[in-house]
Image (cartoon, rainbow, N blue to C red; front, side, top):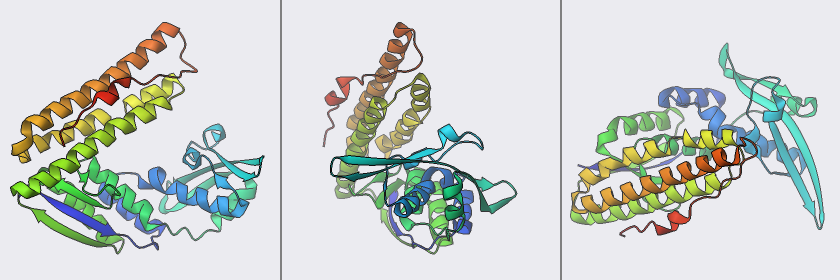
Length: 287
């Protein structure tokens, strides 16, 4: 057996306790990374606006400039804007509760919410956890993933997390038959191409030296390392996989290096607007 295909369904009735249980099982802070958008969307409904930057609900207490969510409402040629200052964090003494600071018009609204979270948010966190350990999508739309047997421990943790929130899962074991290898390798190359394209897009959005440093530490090169196992389990395509991984690594490292050189040459650390390398267009994957 070379791995397992897994799909799941998470109910939309997950509580803060469920969030903490999943966070502990996966050893990752899924509240901060994945669930603040749920709160942002609820506030948007209250304001009758659209959240423009819900991911900005981060920061420390009294650090409101880093915790501003911008909402917009467009009516013809007119655009109304509202900026909500809010910090939501797990309570240090009670992981099943949250501390809320910020705009008094909104904090009472947020405190009154039932705080049940969408299954999609928790499912996305589980998917990200698995992809940190070499999992790849076997459907372009997501929801179904192949996990190499080498990372069986990550699959076991994901299954435990799904069970803790009352989710359902479906698994199929992949033996390594040539037809199975052909299907998996196509998904592998699609996943690798998406990884490089996503990195290039994120680099194009970087505005500061700090943002560039954060992107460099985002773990994209580590993600490439976890994918090297595919060169072993998909032995019929080993050379193609190794070549594609080396090419992806060169593209990403060159883009980071070129962006850093532009910072040094400009003599400015802020603002910084990098120009992504066009080499990403040269990534030719044998599928």
